[in-house]
Length: 139
View 1 (tube, rainbow, N blue to C red):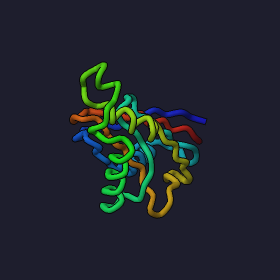
View 2: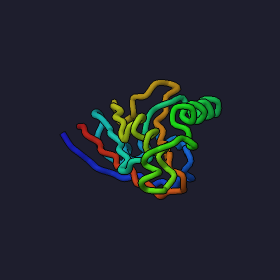
View 3: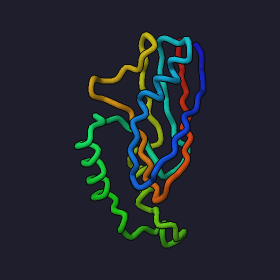
């Protein structure tokens, strides 16, 4: 059993920037000799999250639309009153989505559904430089 930690660097636009990171995760996995196990991706920070979707323009638009309905940018957030940074909605969205995702791999390939991709979403109200941690556990 081995544990390997890698990093993925991303520069984002902020404002619910949705990025397909599936190939980047697979790239890091392919650099190892591991064939079976689990890959966990974690975003340090409280205004971004990870999940899976069918990464296509219609669903990406829908995701942005419904996240805006759940936690609107123009909402009244105690966080904004305290810190005056205007990103209270980003913290709420990120906490609903979560900071990590785990994907099993078999024969050195991520085991995802046909139309399933891993996405990173930066909810913050400004562009950011993000570093994702990828931990690969397997044999």
